[in-house]
Each structure stands twice: as structure tokens, then as C-alpha cells.
Image (cartoon, rainbow, N blue to C red; front, side):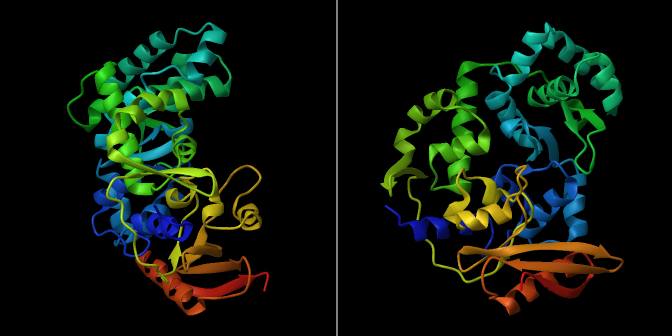
Length: 354
């Protein structure tokens, strides 16, 4: 149905790499979630896909339009507020590692979540220390897992602009609050919605890609896949089975330079990053503990890494090419554009390994 080159072009075009989104909610709908262990890299990811200033991007995060909750792979992500019920129905209605940990330790998870819900209703902001007091004297892993489960089940969210995991608020602070309960039909519809949106934002992709991105196993997604057969085209290429929403179209190749942020969803949403880079380049882009660097994409391939450092009113940039230098003028323009949106000046660009 598509060649490898066409798949790459389609994927790169979807998240505003060729033309940034003008509406931030449209981008968030397309991306679904931004990996957000740290606030600044998540904000850079957001900024690089939308046509707005850093200040406006921060305001969008502050205006109760997004929430930080644990979801995909039990990792902290930023979602639109209206997607929280989908997260609950996909991730919060099934047993996971949190339930297994609590069962092993003899912990009454539902009772603790009830106490967390109670304190969240009574206080505008709840501290990590207060949550840990409710949970009790258990390992840091168990305390973190239970707090994550409270987010998955629609109770607490981490304040979006926070660069720590110290302060939380109850979902009722975002508007009318009602308790969500599992409903088999609604839960599978939510899973179908998530799969549709993943393919719309990242397809063509394999089910292994979706599982890698979501952290769900094949048994959990099979019933939804079965219902979506009529909506999806399936094809095999070089031994891999790909899936795309019906009507997926090829797009023109682009020479535009795109600077991703660290953990950019457009790069990490797939199990195998070699769709855009070689295995040797992947080893340069990913650290041994799984941190994804900020990547330079040009000519529909990864060509190197970039990073910035604050220097008072300036930004100092460092470029590391994977191979030979290229697209230097275009990269310089993108770095200057990035600096201007932060209301900074682009300082000298340094090159490593050249």
C-alpha cells in the first residue's frame, strides 16, 4: 500500500513538522499525550509543533486545558483535560502492576484511593507528603505506584507547570466532578477511540508500535481491534504488518528542517526508531537508561542532535551531526526562530565531533 519512504513522509507530516499547528488543542488532539517527566522538555516538545511563543505555550498549560497524569506505560504524560475519562476507561479499569504490587504487600488499594479522594475534595492542593502519610510506610516504588493509580482512576492530577511531583489537585477543581465507573461497552469504545487517534496521529504503524507507545498488551487491545477491522487498512512490507485508517494518503516529501524536543512523541511513538535513523544513530540518540535526545530531522531522516543552554539573555546551541554537516543554513534559521519565541537571542552555535 505504501513504501517505506512514503510511511516516513506520512508520519513526519502529521504532527506539524512541515507546517506547525496554529491551534494548540488541535495539536494535542493529534499527539494525544506528551511524555512529561520534566516540564521544560515537554513544553519544548509542545512549542516545536505549534505556532506560538513560549509565554503563550506556558499560559496554555496554566489555563486548566491540560493535565499531567500517569497513563501510557505508567509514565507521566500531559493530556487535554477532556481526555481524562478516556485514560480512565483504557488504563484505569484493568488490573496492572499497581494492583499486583499492592496484592503482594497486602495493601487495601481501594481503601487508600478512597482516602486520597477524600483529602483531594477537602483541599485545593494536596502535597506529596500528605499522600505518602495516607499510603503508609512502604517503599518509594509502592507509594509512587499508588499515586499514579489515583491519577489513572480519575482522582488527582499533577499541577501542569510543576517541575516536581510534589503538588496535586483533585479533578473536581477542573469543573463538575462525578465518579467514573467501569462499563464494558464504554470501556471498549474508549480503547477504540485511542487506537483510532493513534493511527490518525502516528500511522501507518504496527500493533507492536501501539503497544510500545501505550504499554498495553495484545490481549487488552484485541477486542477493540476486532471491532475496528472495517475502519483500518492492513498491509505487509518487508515482513512487517502495518495498519492505517482507511483513506490514508501519501504526502509530498519535505526538505524542511524540524528540531524535535527530548522525548518528542513523533519520535518515541514507535517501537523501532530505525524507521528514521540507523541503529548506530539510535545508540547516539538514546542514553543507556532510555532517555531520548532532541533530534534534528531534515530530508525525512534524522541527521543529528541539538541541545541548548541558558546564558542570561542568550541561548547557547550545540549541534552534533550523525555524519557529515548539512542543512546548516536551515538549522541556524530554526535555532534563531526557537530563541525568538523564548524572547532570547541565539548565541554562537557550537558543533561537536567536527
